[in-house]
Length: 414
Image (tube, rainbow, N blue to C red; front, side, top):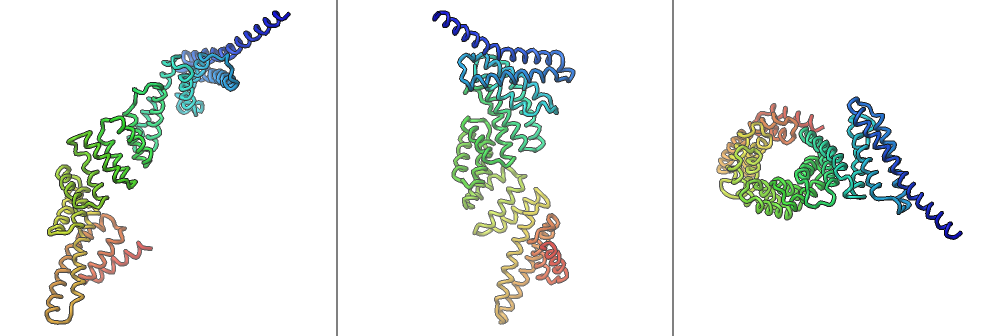
């Protein structure tokens, strides 16, 4: 009797193992058959009946696999687990391609997860099938990112490129040598343009580690460090960039910005003058050069500032900042002379000095006037420009015009 009992137990155990496999296999086979019917007969007709049935079957297979895994069923074979996830990836990959169809909602994420789990369950099983599903979605995401980047929808471009990169990394699980650096770069640049500086920094730093062949990686990363007030890091990364790309002029503007932020104007001027020769049509550079000359002591600095602002205006007519600064430069000199004149006494010599200083002040106000007028044309809502115009006309004795600008100022100030 004892031997018979053992045989019965063994037979039950065998039947349970067989059932455990057949239970999952039945639904896998059903999903496979419906998927084949969809691909062969329905796909070109826009019908989805077989695909929906395939989804129902593979969902059931997946449910049963998860239950057996949760129960730590040792009889569940890894090849059946991998096969379940592989067919799930294929079914949901097809669903993801139904653009505009409610069936596509969330399908891409399900397909990627399924392919990832199939590879994890058995790295050698059906790798090509899983990668075929993943690669199509990777390409779709990359193309969407490229379109969004072209349209300057950088936030959307970032999400699409990031998804493409993540899918690529799932496809190449276990391979450290295969790295999609061009897509990493697009993720980084999209993040930077979208204002996601922390994300951009992470991907740019990764590209530096990978020795990516693009100077922009170094200049962009330096700019992010500068925005965060980390000038030492900014300087270090530019140093690495210069070592990596000797003879390149790409880092000059970054060096200037670092020097300016570090209050090293004298050093910055030298770099700016060098940059101005390299980029003779860059109006912003000539404007920055003029602003820097104004901060420096020494003979001829004011004239150099004037020449630089005028050069900026030649490159970019109507450039508000250059117009305003030119007007302000003359205005401030005039104000200093007016102040000096007002402090003189009543003696004949002081009166003579007063007349000279007043005339010099008026001449400077007259020089400032056309620049402020053009600045007001470029930006009629700038309050400081209106104040300057009001004061200039008052000093030149045109009280009606002064009152006109005062009225404009008060209307905008409300």
